[in-house]
Image (cartoon, rainbow, N blue to C red; front, top):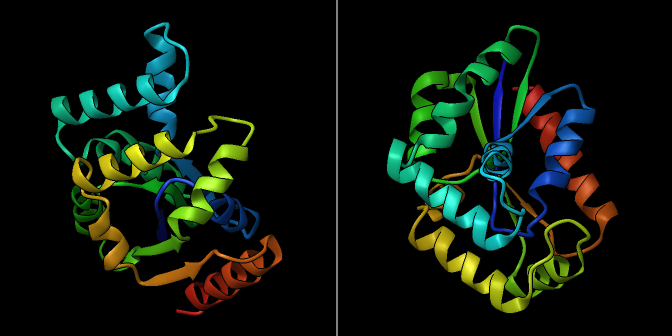
Length: 182
């Protein structure tokens, strides 16, 4: 059984890639669900400011590996029946936690798109759209406060997502095939 973590900046296409893994038989676990649940539990609207505040507070309280820790039981339960894909690895510390716990079963797939491409996608998405200013601010926060660049730089595979959805699908299916054949 394998644990595949998808990492990338906001708007790169992580969730699309994770859904393709899911359609190939992987159980999908979205780390961001923890944030959404906590924001709702506090009775706050889902928006960038509230989500960021919750993400940062959870990491202050539990450390930078918080999301890996909070999702470990879900990952372990899902592994009993098959491979797992994590939608949204964020910090270097989460990477280290998962690598330590899952060893050779653990693999990272980075999804990359330029800031300009990501900002255009984020402005047009129906759920949680971001302005260019919000997207740039989130990029800075993810790099400076969440240590997100580490997992991207050590990824086992990188999918370039600058072109079309069919191109992303083809690239992702190639990566899935390579992972399944390892």
